[in-house]
Length: 333
Image 1: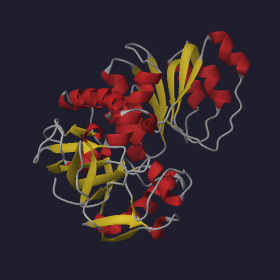
Image 2: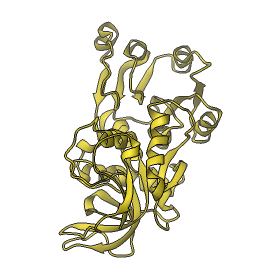
Image 3: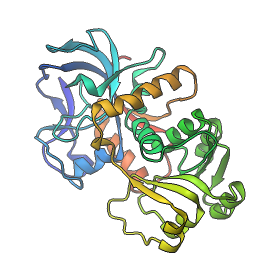
Image 4: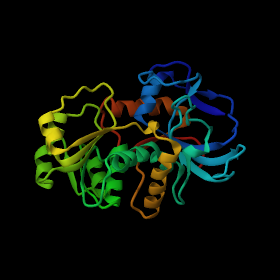
């Protein structure tokens, strides 16, 4: 099979595209003919070696996947050949990645693709959708009528947070810095959309929610807790899922006397069964038109290195040329 892979850690130029052996499904596993593989910031960190995880070379890149079941191993009960499926959790904790013509994975990491959703769209919602759901509902326990703030509502996780919070009846404020991103936030249903380059965001948030924010979903790698914590409501919850090198100052006087909480998490700490709860909600919201994918830029498999470099330029480099997800297209779907 053709695959995008690395033989050593390094920058995006280390990614090669060539022939590797097609994997075979073992007990409980599914062989997927891949239609699309979406990439995320964690892909960049794994490829570069910045995040250390068990990995065997050649290592196929990519964490998110969507395609059609080609073959199933003994004991598989949820899928059969010809079914369409999507999933995440590839390329981590010793697993091979998804940017290949075929991917083999335990059936628990896969979910049925809803009718009408293309493979690029299904791959684009995988990790970001699971991450948004876990942060909002497993960690912060978001409820109807509460207020939510998320930075970068036009981004991968941010766009999912906006839509999921609205789906359960919450009020949502968000920020963006480009006209296309601001427009997307409005189309996704955000109640308050601010331009972080022009607006006084803290002041506008105080006006919007005078008693404070119930759930602050932080997507930035260097959170400013001195600004965030005073903006939380009594019993407010702050969700952290990025910023491995950050060492922010915590204003304790604004934090503990108001029963505020900080929740950190990483999606790959959750089991397949725990993530299944997220996927079932996502499927329901997709069918109801309450959740929409946002594919920002697609690259063919032969340009996998360019795809990762483009994502890195926008996430780490702040180029500002991406709205939506970066997806590598491989087959039909």
